[in-house]
Image 1 (cartoon, rainbow, N blue to C red):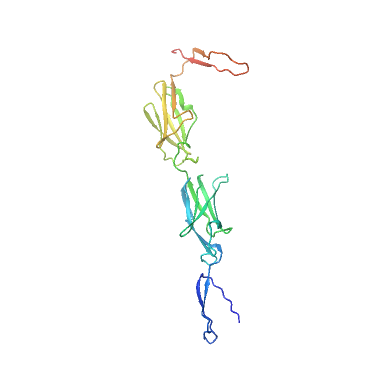
Image 2 (cartoon, rainbow, N blue to C red):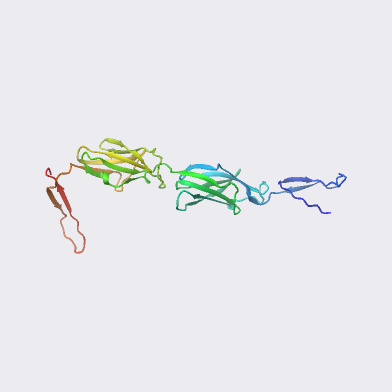
Length: 278
């Protein structure tokens, strides 16, 4: 007679064969060592909450427990190369996909992915080419801390004006990855003429700085975001030039460099206009 049977639990099993009269067949007690089957996406598990919060540039990590179709440790044992991990940004029309890594650990495997663009991501984990059941995760990634290299001052209109006329600078605060800091909780300050002008948040990562001047002159200025200074395109700071209130131009002087010019090459000269008071 031939007897066929299968096991679903990986372990050492003792097999006993009985006759119809419940008598044990001599020598029927024998041990069967059962190993796990190959890894299965249907039963492998991802140890992460369905909703994850993070910031740009920060690793999102969670555990993976590979199992065979019966819930046993797989045989052969799973390798890091068996897994594929990706995070796809779902809140923009631009396709952004971030590949992750999987490393072995004492308790199984640890998956890690580092998004740099703020938004909502869908994270999926595949094993042996198939999507792990219930492994699709949602990660909301916010902007990282404000950055001196990412934050900018828009335009140069705030660098020249007349006395008693407010000049307004617009500061756009971003993190090191270019993400807008749209929480409105950054401390933006204009330092000029021995005064500190606090910024007013107007949305979309933008802060408005308004300042008027009572005397003409040139005033060194700097703009602080939290604990760092934004660097201008020409150096570490800016100069705000304030003129007297505009009057009718009555004196015009041509300011031109001495020397020769070349045919076909553009030459530059300046016109300097002054009012009646000079």
